[in-house]
Image 1: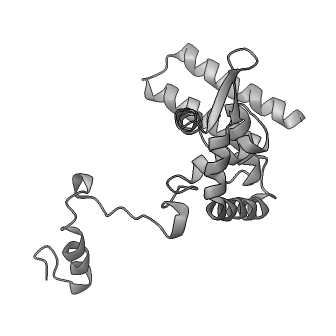
Image 2: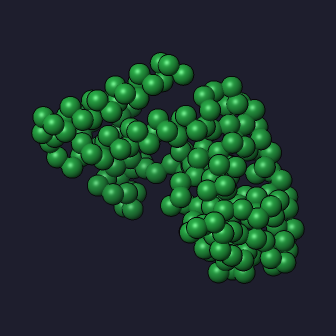
Length: 192
């Protein structure tokens, strides 16, 4: 029995977890989660998002933002990839020669699949089909919830508030401005 505990039911934790030297600060172990999900909180496993993005581009040339929206809508709002996930994936696909990029409207970049990209999709077709089925199933399960655009907007508001409040205390004028902005949004929503 571990000397920290007299209760043998608690000893198993330390006997198992004190050996895990890769954990930061001695915290609980990292759980990877079942199957291809990549772990808790992750919708796609390693390399899965690349296949999905490439498949969406194969369906029709598109911009990064359109890819984010297409994924979000397909899974019924259960997952919305961030620009910080999508744009590096698009850059990697370009570097691999799987897509080409051309200038679109303004600063937008239009992504189009190449023959190498189509060959990559064909080589990974069984995995892609399983991913698309999982996304469709998620869309069926979550389709009755709030629209993905509303969920994203709510999360954006929460994040903006947290970021602003983490920068330090607000003075009276700033407090009133934040409260007025939230009140205005609430009033507008009540009228919709």
